[in-house]
Amino acid sequence: MTCVRILLWFAVAFIAAIAGGLIYIKTQTNGFSARAKPTAFETMAARTARGLALSASVRERQNPVPDSGQTVGEGREHWADHCALCHANDGSGNTEMGRQMYPPAPDMRGQDTQRLTDGELFYIIENGIRLTGMPAWGSGSERDRQDTWKLVRFIRHLPSLTALELEQMKDFNPRSPQEIREEMEEQEFLNGGPVHPHEQRHEQRHEQRH
Ligand code: HEC
Image 1: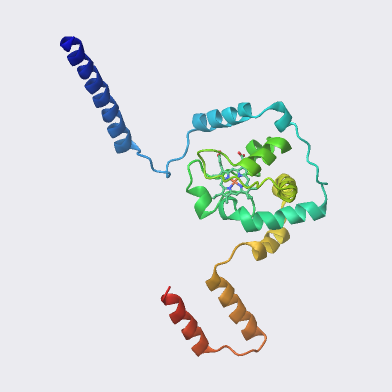
Image 2: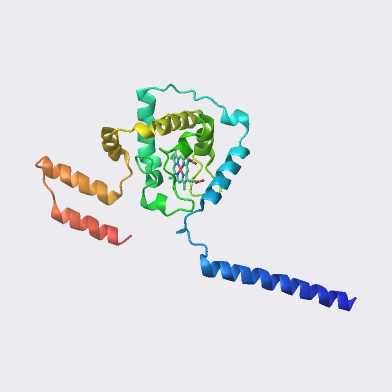
């Protein structure tokens, strides 16, 4: 009996040592840094698993909002405000946040994204993608669902986005309070209005206290 127990302990200690060793080696080589890029195999496996996880009824859903300039325009503003932080206005994923994630935000103008069905895009926006930086945006309300379908229309439009549209989107990108203040001052200056340096200083002092 005691002999069996000792053997069992040895077995447990042996397994723990191997597991510990493997974890050590792994962290010494590439660790858990998000700087690495997923291999082509990893990306393919994740995409296939994602595709298989969705039922045909979800994949085949039709977009209920019309394909019009109006809906694409609304989707574009929404994108600039909520999605461009990671995905960039042009959908390239070329932003500080998007590039540094594991997996990174993909170039959504390319085939990999455009090949997804409207239903898949809708599902991803509503529910996010587990174990990635892609958040779930759906709240379940009908209005939100409509907004998501408009985003799907906009994603389809990404490959043919014009320079003018890109310029207009900048107005909808989120700005920090500092940027808003600077813009207001600039506007005031252009309108010939007064800029009060002492007020500015007071505001800065106020901010420093927080
Ligand atoms: C905080 C960063 C972040 C924000 C904000 C974000 N996303 Fe994403 N998104 C990601 C990342 C990272 C991926 C890649 C996930 C993967 O490879 O599995 C992704 C993937 C996607 C995909 C799947 C593309 C594909 O080819 O697999 C869609 C669609 C998408 N995002 C839409 C949106 C929309 C629409 C918004 C705004 C409402 C948004 N995302 C906001 C980070 C973000």
